[in-house]
Length: 303
Image 1: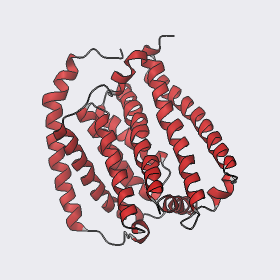
Image 2: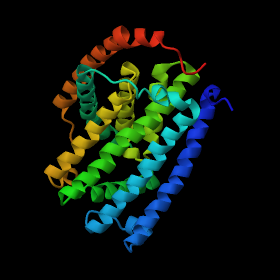
Image 3: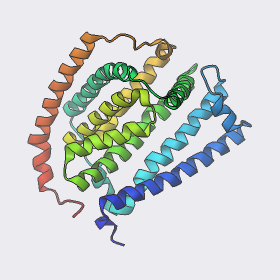
Image 4: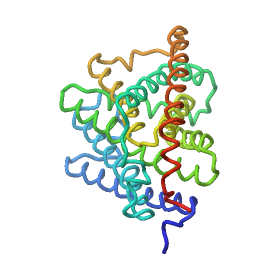
């Protein structure tokens, strides 16, 4: 089979197949990890919260590690390799880096989006949610609070790896490296592909109270991928946002639990808009003058 001529829908279906298989493998390994510790996985997950003991917290982290690894990273890598073979790194844009200036601008850009997303989160919270969505939000909140209880350096490093390093790699491989690129192939509209991939990125998390801020964050990462044409740029930005929150939570205990979204810091929101606008212009100009001309000279990977 000539996999390099596989249409976008075929690539996405292959990806979904690998994700389903990966979910099964990840679940099986999580169950095995629980058995080795003498714990019942379903019981741990059902009652998991901030008061859960360290053994249960680490088990949940390990379960999430297997899920992230096989559902996102491995499935994306396998899809890229089976479709593009030796050119998989080139297809994913992992064979090119970025200058320090662009990486610094990308981090500042995504930080601005993170600040603005606090306003979007407040706005999102004003929308009424059905009972089933509220129940899911409550369960997700308890899970996050429990994972972010870190009483030792070891817990911090494990949490940083599971919540910041793996998602930065795996989710960017999946949502930007494959989904966004295939949507761009499908519609020949890179901006539409950015927002469609961001929508899928936000919906995949199944946290409805944070849908709009995560949508905006996903779009920001998508634009970084589009403007730089290097997957390392959104990977670094993604890691920065997640890692910053993990480090902040570890340094200032219970910061997440005590945070509030009742008021909006309008000064911070306004400054974030200016930061986003200025860096968008800078990164877009870099794309027009440095990235796009070089891209036009490349031999396309797909027909």
